[in-house]
Image 1 (cartoon, rainbow, N blue to C red):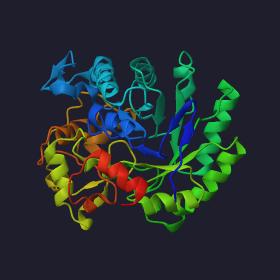
Image 2: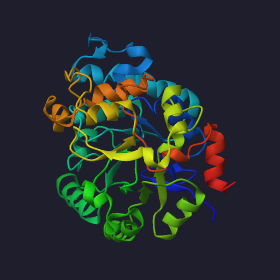
Image 3: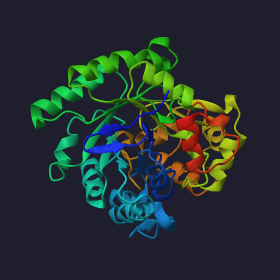
Length: 363
């Protein structure tokens, strides 16, 4: 099967492959810039930008961590990340991933638009007011992430009624993805919630609103997976974990090493302060948390609203901002290493160019 171009709003992707937005610092300028350069959609994660370039853009810190929302989600750092990505990919489409669950969601969406994002992608909740923050940027395409046709229907109804707009594309994320899931722990294991059984109903719902392109995500590994999703009705795919296994991925070498050394049984669903199950790698941190011996929880960065300023973090046993940041900085002992279900299949590091060739041509 030949992978054909696909449009998202005013933007055309040469190949129907979206690189998943991975934070903290896994998909910033180098990874996103090179994916866009090679014809996919590079996605910059807006999460934890205060850690960019060794926290050079965080104006206030406590214990070497960005203090409060404005420093954890640093506008100046985000602008610099986009500037550097543009030096790599030029005018190719470039996206920003902004989680709906974060504090200052609207501000970070506006920051992304001002920084030069062509497309905004939002998951971790239903972004029913997403268009409100892009009113001054009519060319920016809006792409929510959903886990069911019901969620897409709700978003479309709200957007059409309030803003006279529908999504420019939608990402359907199944329960094999890395990081936070849009399902309960039990649903992640149930057959009816697996990606291949959700694509058809979501594509049907998208067609009711004018053939919104649907990108399937979660457990996508190679061209065969991409072809299978397209045969089921998707316009393309989003994939994150496999891009970690590239030289250009912004993750620390230790992060890549954790995945290179991971076995299938090491990839598991974890409890998270965000309130959703999250998929990651069993590491020393997970062992400590299970014994309630994890590091102190202080909520310096105030990253996500559902955590309630550290209340949920203390309940599950770790601060997600601090532990993801530790992983970005290469701390194997205390870092939280998110991965999709196929993370253990990364056996070597290759270039983004080589990976895109494998995905497009199956070679």
